[in-house]
Image: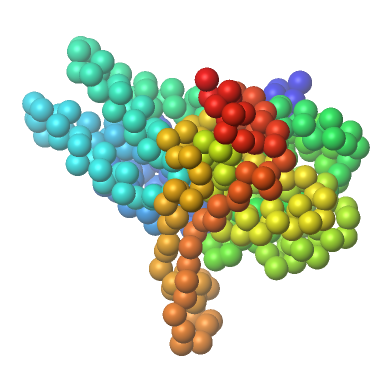
Length: 355
């Protein structure tokens, strides 16, 4: 029932593959402008990822998968016999575009694993294209599964309408469709369990106020925007029952890297006895890293903090601009994936999930 309601309400997508090209909705321009741009080279897609024209861990991975298809197309057009070897430079360029979101590397590995099969096929480009489409479709299905599982968790804890808080953008704009944390929010709304979504603005790129708010308003989901520094005050009031966030990388022990500001929300939620939920596909889980200490944390130019919409607002000072932080597993009540739900995550439980 919830699945059908979500499919019927679907309005937003971050990317589209058609006629041999990748179309990306430029998320830097939302909500003032909805501009789609066609990409025909892997290098251009890598730049779009680095420049945050497309963002969100699952969406980055999907875009990179199609970028490999574009690169292969270009090598075939150029008549390169050793197209597999030529792709190595494209893989490296895409891998360097954003360091923290493991979905990027997961998707690239999926495409790399497909190369030998494609090489033996009469139409190798068709094989690579189908693999990229499979990655996209699998993410959509994962989102729907996570929405249902997250909804069940919320319903078990409190079957009445309630307030939730979210951070950054974890919706259709960040994924192949529907969203991770925002997918659960959508499901809760469809089930009548939602009174209000409190949206953290999420400085400095304002993914909350620009993107999450745009998605919620477009679907008439009741919501209120707040500055990031109001989170403690809001949680103190006692109305919010869940903080629901996404993830860019989850390590073997259950530590979670997500948008900067997530860690402090987890600390605040624990202090105020508010449940903390992380929603992410299993492609976000990196069992090769034992803890969050090992996660590479991207740092971007300080100018992103010093200026707003290209207009400098800060004094003449340098800025420290980490994009992500790491929330320790002990502050997380539940991790929801398409494979299942992990409560009070630890190494043993994460290993069982990923078997």
